[in-house]
Image 1: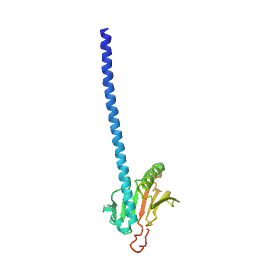
Image 2: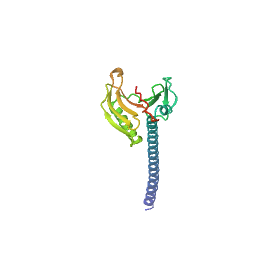
Image 3: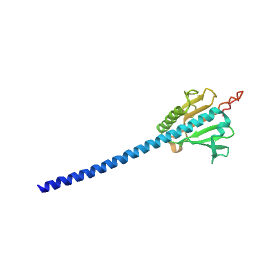
Image 4: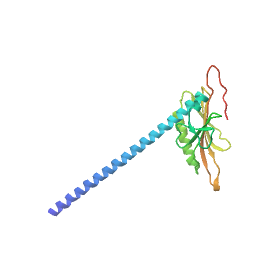
Length: 197
């Protein structure tokens, strides 16, 4: 009888230790999940902020577009880096022609490019002021498989987003997502003519 009591006591102690470890592991998993959600939320918030700043700059005219740049691009002396950057995109501002160009890294699958394209469309939709910016799907160009454009009704500024089939090294497909932004004219008693490259 005493052996059974000791055996049951041992089982209860083992069970409570396992339960405590399971609860601790569950708490750690929940903590990691919450932190991951917060980081994703911060990243989405940062992304929306960068896109909103880009839209405001484009709709405010050429000088405002120049102000979006930070340091000079390593690849081209006539271009500045976009600040703040857009996540997953390499963006620059052309100081001569006053337009913004962004490119994703090449991806091998069209599905991956479509996922990034859809994500950027969603973020643009959330970031752009809905009272003035309108989006429409465009007929894809020669090199692009999907195209979408946003236009500011007040200034005629444009943001175009495309999936472009890239070069095919070794016979494999390659895709990039691009964003191009052109400033609109600025109303200062007259309409400055807008130039699109």
